[in-house]
Image (cartoon, rainbow, N blue to C red; front, side):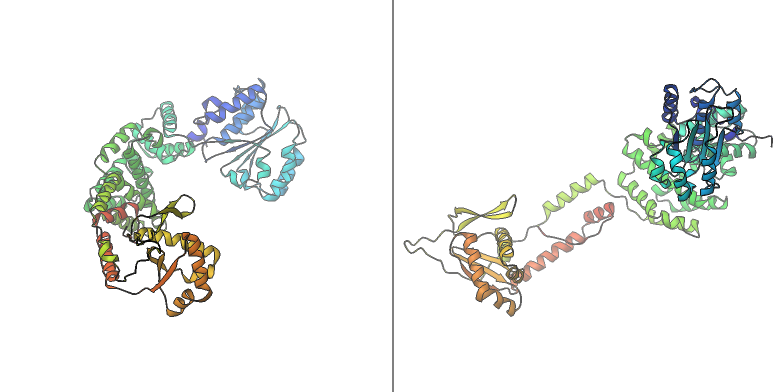
Length: 560
């Protein structure tokens, strides 16, 4: 066949002409100049990024008649035959079809023979990860200590499938996806050489569709030129290779952001009638909203988005008045529904359902404004009157000192401690006021911890107890539970143990008074007020905004 496709016709023949892999070609050039080329090399990376091309250039550089040189002449017999793929000393082996142990045994038997006329016998094994485990094992010894005239070059798209024993014997070089600009620039060069007229926008669209793969880009360019007449534009691309015009993507985005369901359905119907692949369209829309979110954030746009500056300007204008949180909500839906779209037997219907969900989203408030509103909401919540809720009807007689009529002062309690959480103090209170409820809770937690350490079974019975009041030498403990539980705590050895702990804890003789916890009007009143506060919080629109932004749910409401 006389026609040669662009991917073969314009295959690089020297390290300098390899596109987008300077980190690899520069390393090889330096290694060859210094005479430090490894006997086994592994080239890994995405498909169509130049692995086999670099392997051939390396073979030419090692066998060129000019000697080991980073710039092979491409004229001598060795260079010419390697370029044509007919060299008897450079053997290209397909790892997928020669993956058996018998193939490696043949290779192992042949490596002992010297090259016919070249300096090195080079084995290039493509898709080496396809070799079987037995084949890899058979290759180990030869790969580690090959004859001085043998060199191995492996290429793979899946290096993780290669055994570690093989990887450790190779010098590895990782190829990167080729950038949009590099692919576009190469196609511009080819179009000038071929004297064909293709618009810059079309070449950019082809490069974007290639996904960092130069071979795919050149194959698409071949297809477009073979199916079109005259100047190639984006409209031609839409008809020939099914790429959606970028203007259509922007129209879809505008319809979503403006909640124009009629325009959106009309665009989708036109695309469907023209036979576009809706799964590919979904990927483009998802990527576009991702790019819009990056543009809205406004940091490192040129690095994070591989698009022409003119298109980035359009995107900046498109999201100028759109909150970042709203874009994030849409992007989140697109990402979560990707599997539903991918496996749907009716992609058009699935995409319409996803868009309907998007249109139901209410633009969320910016997080800064939401936090400000929540702070204001907290400040405006009325505090319940604790005096009316927690007042007690039980009177306790004052304990007086035998030597005076003054009341015995209670020992102070330090409610905070960095390590234990709470601990008792040593100063005496000079007031007869009852300890505040928050302090009582903290004291009980600390006391119950001591009980748990010394008498676990007693602590289990007292798990639902609480200190109701401390006054002088009297501590009132409220017991919640049935009569059996009450009797277990308030009698016998349990009571003796509890008194001993309380005496040590407070540093004085303590009289313990037990009460059964009963429902009073005040506790009912407290529950009613708390319930009202919870209902108000659940129905507050600001809380709804917060749930909407963070895609959250309410598990509990606490009144502080």
